[in-house]
Length: 130
Image (cartoon, rainbow, N blue to C red; front, side):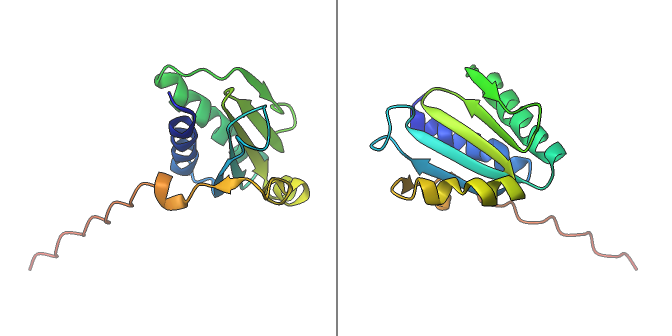
């Protein structure tokens, strides 16, 4: 799977589990470590762990396995390393403190419209019968 496609798949998996502030940054020209960062925020340490587990599960179903995981103990910042894509899932406090978007401000943001799936229209309730 190409790096950008992998980043998009990861962002979509996080979005499906209601991650907040999802960002994809292309950092290929800034570091030799990876091509993309996917950054997301959970609402609690439990949510952060669930987000990381979901990303790992969804990509595993597509035959893509995480190379390394860090931060599972504290669950304030969990890092999933897929080689060409690194996922950072934070609590809001850790996200604010580390502020990776500012640290990597020279990275190229991937527009949300590129990866976010259109929302399905809400099903209409059946009309009340008289």
